[in-house]
Amino acid sequence: MGRPKKKDLPDLSHLAAPGQDLPVRVTPKAGRNTVTVVGDLLKVAVTAAPENGKANDAVRDILATALGLAPSRLDLIRGATSRDKLFRVTSD
Image 1: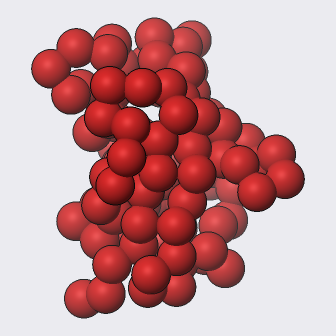
Image 2 (image 1 turned 120 degrees about the vertical axis):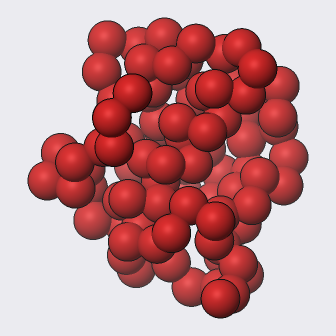
């Protein structure tokens, strides 16, 4: 899995405030990596399989790229084994 390209993702930099909670609906084993905004929900499709945390890592990488942040600034708060997840943007 290579790093997602910024040009293929929406600009979500307005959501990158520290303390911001990001509700995410994940589709693992998708045909390609995408991020779609539907109201307050982010729909993220990743090509990674949901095994051993690979899909969670892929979602974190894609969200971080779209937000313009380092992946380490996104914490998975809820939903490690669920399709519905909650990520929180942390400060430096």
